[in-house]
Length: 314
Ligand SMILES: NC(=O)c1ccc[n+]([C@@H]2O[C@H](COP(=O)([O-])OP(=O)(O)OC[C@H]3O[C@@H](n4cnc5c(N)ncnc54)[C@H](OP(=O)(O)O)[C@@H]3O)[C@@H](O)[C@H]2O)c1
Image 1 (cartoon, rainbow, N blue to C red):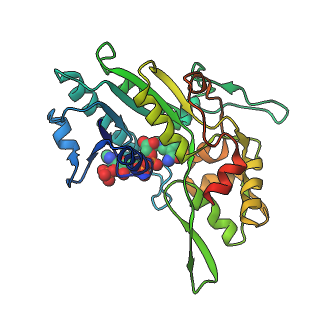
Image 2 (cartoon, protein in one colour; image 1 turned 60 degrees about the horizontal axis):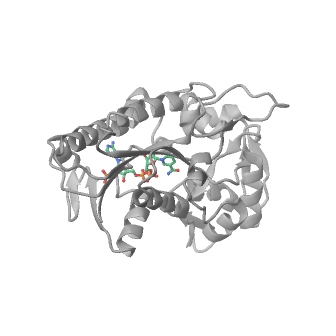
Image 3 (cartoon, rainbow, N blue to C red; image 1 turned 90 degrees about the vertical axis):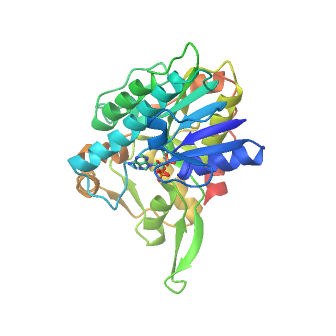
């Protein structure tokens, strides 16, 4: 097969490209930068897209880039990087006389939004058919992004929409500061979550009851391959492990794996001050996402439960 991956140079895209190469498929990446086996978004905009069997769009400015202060300009960049790349691809693919068999668009679990859940209430289960719990900014952004992807000509091109949870990638330890402490490096959020523990500041976030919809990177890649290979799959699929846990349980499991204590709780006001109120819900709230259609499609998670996933990754 020939698979085109928008944003294929990133954390998920490079893992997917490696898996496709391992099974003998050819990969072209769409990037802002030209290079071997790459095309640029400018080429896509003028309809210069090579023939392919499957197209996936993973492009998007990182919403939780801690090096950037959350400003209106940054927020607009986060939205535009998803909406404009998706629009360019949808227009180019729709215009092809021989389009790819499948277009896979990506969205996030933030689609399901956040709601007021009391201390004595259960978080509602959210399947692919559920409406959002509420409309915070991340939910609004994902809704706009999904709507743009729905412009694909689904009569000619099978459309699969994957809503991805918080992706846990491998945390590779390397010594720093003459071996006094160790840092984990790799894409995804796990190295960021590990660092406070390494510094002896391991903490839960906010009230801690909020669900933490995690998924192992191998399962994101596995589900995307499954979606390419399964002609009956169309519509929405949640890429979230069945063994979802609360933020407090996740933090405790990570602490056990790192053999470090959980010493404190980062209060909501501090998290909001650190990352900005508009995107703080990503850290402070969570959604009880259930991969109902994903399991019904026949996909079997390699890491359905948290502890084996953390043992594999950390
Ligand atoms: N990682 C997660 O936990 C997670 C969870 C839910 C959803 N997602 C979604 O899955 C997608 C891939 O995630 P990821 O973690 O692999 O992201 P990533 O590592 O940040 O990579 C995304 C790619 O997007 C391209 N990109 C960045 N800024 C851009 C911009 N302003 N305009 C156009 N392209 C831009 C970059 O490619 P070039 O530099 O080559 O152009 C980059 O390699 C994202 O859309 C993300 O929202 C990720």
